[in-house]
Image (cartoon, rainbow, N blue to C red; front, side):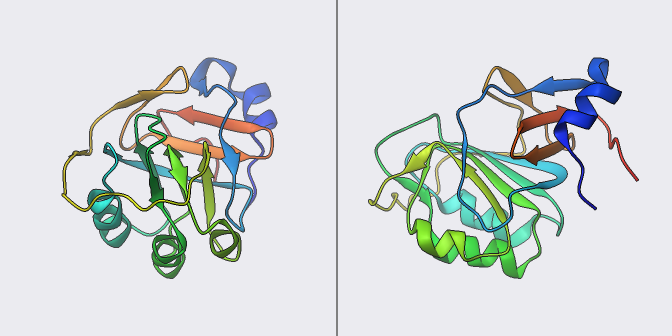
Length: 160
C-alpha cells in the first residue's frame, strides 16, 4: 500500500516530524514506509551489515554515518541483503557505492550521494539509539514514510 507523504502532512500535521531535504533516492523502490531501526557509525559499515541481517522484515534501517565523505557505507551487496530480507528501505546520512546495482534492487535506499571507496571493517558504532540529522530525531520504533516528496516521521503507525 502506497502512503503519500503529502497526504500524511495534510491529515496529521501535528503528529509528524519532517526531515530536511537533501537525501537522494538510489534504490529501485521510491516510496516505502515502516518502523525504524537505527545504527550510528563513522566510516565503518560492520554494524550496518549486522542490522541488515537481523532487523525485522518491513523495517526501515536508518544509518547515521555522520555525513562523512570519507567512504561509502553501503553498496550492491548490502542492498541485496536488504532486498532478500524484505526490508522496506535504508536511509543513510552518508554515502553509497555501486549505485547501478543498488538501483536494480527492489528496496528503497536514500543517501547523501555516492562515493566509490568502501568503508572500514572494525565494528565500531552504536545500535538502537535515537539519531539526530536532517533537523529531526529518528527514534527506534517510530515510523518513517518516504516518497518522491520527502521523508516524514511519526511516533506511531498512521495507516492501515
